[in-house]
Image (tube, rainbow, N blue to C red; front, side, top):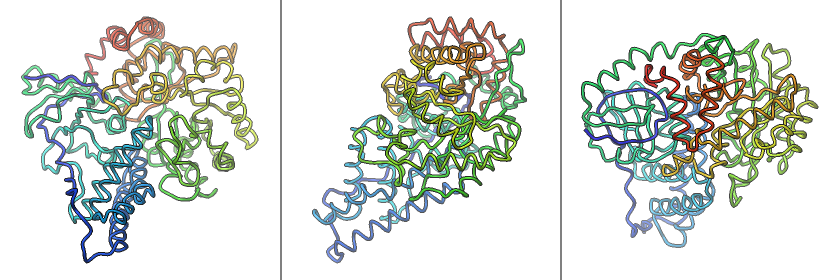
Amino acid sequence: METINGVGVSPGRVIGPVLQMPPPVQEPAPSEKLDPEQTVDQETQRLKTAATAVQAELKSRAATATGDAVGVLEATSQMAADPMLLKAAGNFISTQQHSAERAVWDAGEQVAETLKGLGGYMAERAADVLDVRARIVAELRGMPAPGIPVSDTPFILAAQDLAPADTATLDPAVVVGLATSSGGPQSHTAILARALGLPAAVAARGVDRIADGSEVYLDGATGEVITSPDDVLEAKVQTWREQSASLTAFEAPATTADGHHVPLLANVGNPEDAAAAAAAGAEGVGLLRTEFCFLGRDTEPDHQEQVEQYRAIFDAFAGCKVVIRTLDAGADKPLPFLTNTDEPNPALGVRGFRTDMTSPGVLERQLTAIAAAAEGSEAEVWVMAPMISTRDETAAFAALCRANGLKTPGIMVEVPSAAVVAGQLLEKADFASLGTNDLTQYTMAADRQVGELAGLNDPWQPAVLRLVDMTVDGGKAAGGQHPKPVGVCGEAAADPALAVVMAGLGVSTLSMTARALGTVATVLKSVTLSEAQDIAAEAAAQPTAAATKEAARSRLPVLDELGL
């Protein structure tokens, strides 16, 4: 038996044979030149035709996908037609007489290195570029596109990492577990694995060297990958199978053992997500990502289109709270009509609410559409802006909301400065929601895609919990006898142990993928509010992320009993 320790990102225990991702598309020979019978214009057109075919194939997959997969596939499809990539490839064809295959290969390398140098979200897009490059080369060669191995029997997928487009289309009926040697807990791979309810571990160095067909045990809670599993591990898997069915069931309201209500809301990205979350029993929507209306297009969606899309989601949650986030464009979600792709560091650039400075009008038109969709709806519609950093920004957004008839404006707390002065910001807004993915990344200056930084990019970091506590305190200071509500809508809310800590710190609501509702509710029900507060205080006093997590888990024996 060999044990490989990674970072658990999606709970579950499974045993099965490993299949490695197929070999990548082979690099064209450096000497591969333009066919003498082809002109530069003909070869350039061949490249553009292949890129268009790849974009169409990815868009087609996006049209049949659900949840977070839609946005991922849309964003990757945009990369297939990225002017920077195609222009660089065309230059290689015209100046160096490269074949289209060699030209796009070199251009992809060039663009990916540029993005990596920018860091942050743009560095995440480097993987998309290399994925698209391989797909275009495969299209030019008339070969199948790279993708998940085909198998008639269930297997555990192992890889160095997965392209977002591949992760987005995993079939949980066949791929029963996922382990990668790189990546971090907030990477696209991790987020989509949680959305699929797929046991997964990342940053498990060595899993990409396990031989195909080898039987392994994967624990998506602890991050362990163990080869040649014995009867003890078989028993753990059987226990998980017996308990997991009950963990998926959720009946509102979610409470602690002594009846303290902690509403469990859902993160949704389109009307289909909303319908599924409502069917799963979510008590409302804590994060409605509105990018689904805007991605994959060259122009801003019109008023009526936005109204219809938002209204469908509001109708799915009649009588419930729906927190809608205004457009979070920029960084990893560039839009041709709104964002500047030439920024030196887009993760720290014009994104989220800041786009209103450079492209005024888009935000106000979106707010007008939200207000029109909310009119006559039975949902309780709250609106929040992403990437808020200052009191002035908060006041400007709140005024814009109220001018458009939206009575409950709020802010996302993703930037550390917003947490530090949350009390001042919440004097101008009615609520705050902690986006723990970005808050962790910005606080720890750790790219969430880099496996080597997985330990830093961890919401259990004491500094992150301190900022959560400061935000809650800011809500109390701003609200006096009626504290301003502070929720969590980042991935941290789906971690049942961290959910207990958040509740103990005074967070008012928790929003997560609908698949996590039952698990979080079960663990919350195992403690009283007082116990949750004690656990939170003990955890927050620890000096390291590992100690913080262990302090909380040691007080929650239900986690081991449930295989979490």
